[in-house]
Image (cartoon, rainbow, N blue to C red):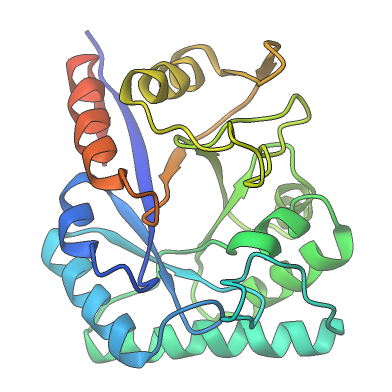
Length: 246
């Protein structure tokens, strides 16, 4: 049987200090670079772990808002948002140069990710930041999002992302974290969720409707209290179904 290959990514460097437990089960990581969490020391530590485990490294910039962990929209001019995001990514790239590594991708965090997915103005800022980087990098973005559409028009390589540990609304937005059914914490439910997206290119929404979705990378949030056990179990179940994580 032909094996499928997918990427599993995880948000790291966010202060939980569980990266050494997560890295064996992921193929790419998104490193907080000072906006919502992180500083040069945390970036350096996580970069070295990723290097040790041969995990692809991405920048995880956000609205500059550590107080709210980047989960609230901050009113900023396009110029100020551009400057902040560019500096966050530069800070991570400085660490990468020290370790003789390359930046693989960029994935916005939290409120910035969700806003860019639906708001053209914000998506344009993110895309301009990606375009400003001298070396080609991938942009992790949701399928059929405004962010993906703007990036593709600008000839940026987009990797469609879906969430292994989050439930979806029928418009492909994520269920709000304020709701009790936002996060998937049961391994069997998570595997069923991911398996449907991989093999059928569909996601079952909280309304019970199946919606078409495409994804090449699947995120498990590192701040999920059960993240390590979920990643370990998901990795094993995918291998049993001839899906390689790479």
